[in-house]
Length: 359
Image (cartoon, rainbow, N blue to C red; front, side, top):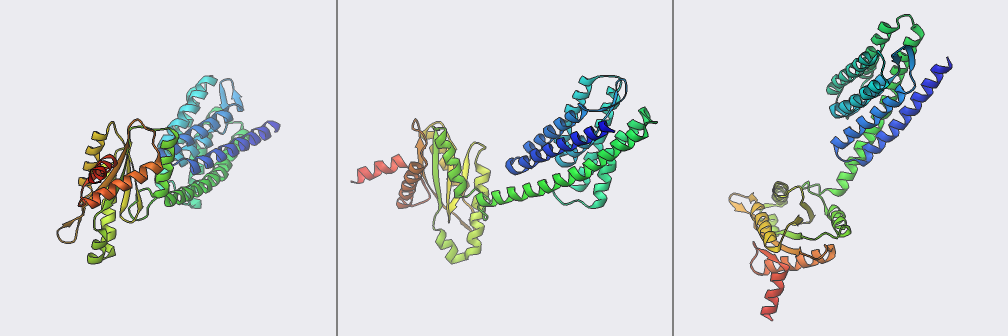
């Protein structure tokens, strides 16, 4: 009986650690793929720890509650987490060795497969019903219970104990994971709302400042900073109404998303003004990029009208990126585009040269 108590306490401890890790991943990791990989790694390692303190049924055969951890990995992390958790626990079972390796691996795989079916039916964000919880408990218990009765059919106490532990883990552990999952989802949504412009779906000024701060910290060079402004936007609002103006801004946001590369960054900084940061090799290449954006951001409105776009840019060649300087000089260059008739690209150096000639 003392062995059973130790196994139960060990299982509860591992479950608590896994729940803490799961909650941290839900709150701090934005990428769904990375979160699911992390879930598989955490719960797979949890299953390995559980296998380190088994009930030995006969030479080479052991019983433990690894199925609960593998099942929860699949149920809360989908295929990615399931593959990782199965790979880890099967590898550990092979290392442990004995005649029961094949049966142990089959139990792990069957549990994961059943939990994946459950995951596909219930989704991975909503609150589950009690009937759904009962079904996942049975899914996780069944492979282990069948293997136990096949190997040690006369060890009723062991069979019922492990089935009960697995069922209890799945229910309590699952409820805890579900709570952390929903809390993490809400926190990610709040973070996204705080850093995203609600009209265009682009990052907002706060996100721009955070990204610029990272560039400053790494002393980045070869960076082009552009300010993009919609020409005569007030006239669009006055003649067609603010609803059309919003549609125009949404269209420009969509065009920006379709034009930026993975290495670029774009944000709406306010009103009809957008900022775009591009890594490029030279000022000449930057000019080509700026022209590409100017043409790509022409959005149709009204019956036959199209927006016109003015761009101001500043390129950091060998000089380390400085956000305040970038914004100030790109803004001056944008003013130069407006003065020269709009619908054009002006870089700060060109603007300065024109001012010197004019003086």
